[in-house]
Image (tube, rainbow, N blue to C red; front, side, top):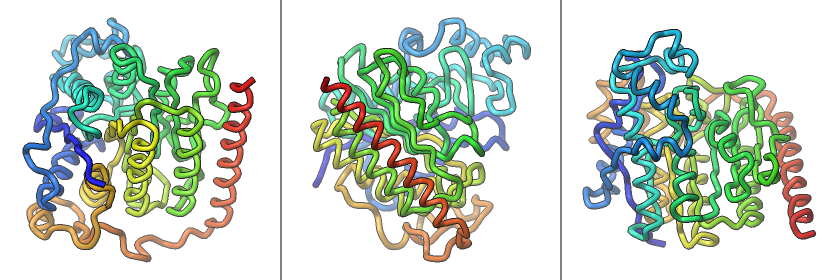
Length: 390
């Protein structure tokens, strides 16, 4: 299967930068782009330059007072006290010069990807600069200032009137997007993430199912800490297929955080590159089966920017093009170029060799707990189908 896909990119993505030692580092997008180029998988003609979101577009998901506060913060005009009211100036989301413009570009890049797909210019579009799923209507949270996923889906609803399935496989719960559409029956959200018992933001329980007309269109599978590939993929593939068949979307938007990997410093999951080969492949197949190929993929979390994120995100692009992941060795020229910059040895292969991490002693217990959660989610879907048919 050869598909027409677009890669949304700007060198200015790196301007979204809090501090030199902050874990959120958009250098990972550049590293991914150069890895794809070194793999002869990305040509200039496939790159789509993004635009900036307008104030009106930002207001689809954010209050005007909050937008104004972000603008003032980026110009050094917001006091510390004022900033804290909006979640700006915290340890997670410090103020930085030009933060409004840098954030507008990330939102605009997601809107660029959406228009490219929904106007029929490409079948799929990848925007690794986006996926900032923790931002709220009037508050920054979890490294996220503006929520490009929420703005983007509101934009789809307003301008295209499509039903949207949002699928979030970041290790952290996709809270900002879920709450933005919690009462909307035309937007279905699925988040598969590490349980909030141990990890920010602490939400995303199975019983978060929507509100009013949106009841039955919010799904969460909070998998246990130290979950490994097989259990993760069983949850993802089963839930994804059942929910797509239940909701029958017109377009699929995926958030592709790469922080479920065992090397990620901020989470406690134990997956390898195997899940990052499979996650986009299932999304790709279902987009063609249910949505005439309409699929917009975003970035997200991922804090080992050298060993994990470039490999994981490159697989999305490869699958978008021909439904097959990269295999074998990484291009030597990429490894040689970046090794001197990396504080850790760079991997040599697209995959993680067997035995890359210590054996998980609770494997059986973790798998059983995840299976129980999955069964509960499937029962919820079955009950909702019966309810909707009555």
